[in-house]
Length: 358
Image (cartoon, rainbow, N blue to C red; front, side):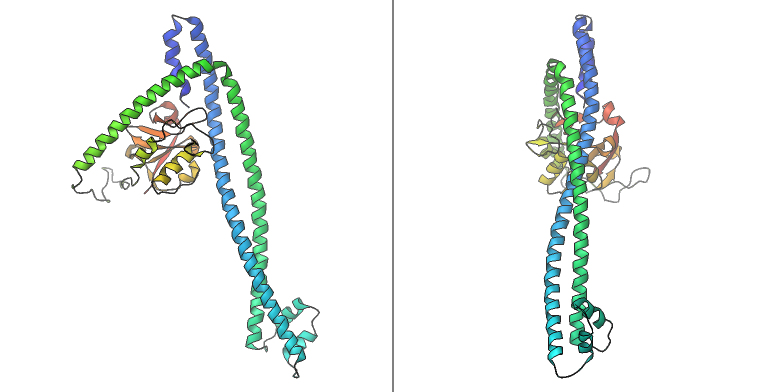
């Protein structure tokens, strides 16, 4: 979302020499400011779409489980009812008169038989067991049918909500495309400048990581600081980042384009990127920024370590801290996985918090 920020010094530099170009760049800046607002809306909608997808997947699993359990309960009920009917036929053809037979002759149907037998306290232990199974399995069938109806209702609502979000995203992206149609040359120029800057940032980060590896190797035999160490103000220090090595993995995907709902190297959205990268390290995270915020340990901004997740925009955006006040993320439509600075005004204003996945 920082694409428009590079236009301001560029416009100032050409204003004196070429007033027409300065005016055009100023207009392009205004358009890009509008696009930035759209990008934030699209990303929030994309994260809501991701959450709806997670809910839908959970519902589908629940439906599958309920169907299996309903099938088992129905099979058991059928068997128990058949056994009870056989027992009642045996009683009817027996020579002796007993309580079960009296109930049978006074009942209109099987439900009536079950209800009347359930009130008797003189039936045999075997008949009592059979009756208990019928009653239990009938209740299970009823419960599972109700659960299925509820899950299907919820499924329909989530599907409709997900479709609505998809439509909204597509509409906003179409508007974004229309806005940018008149400033393609300026955008291309900015993208080229940003690509060169990103390459420089990548080299700097690689050098920093290599230096850290050398320092860690040199101090491998040093005493590890205890987990109960405290900061000067008495607040406990969060445990060290288990997934600090995730930064090296994240760097492999610099330049991959942003794709809303994307979660593979063919294209990532913000939470799809972080989930994929941590997945490569063996940590499972949901494909939703707000859901990822529930994982791990809270970390204050002044205690960030490489590998910590950093969150912005009311939990509508997430990235991976890489050290040096920088983080890697997949920002928005039209951009790529890149390195950005936490000190940028936009990210400072929209900072939410950080989590350490251990």
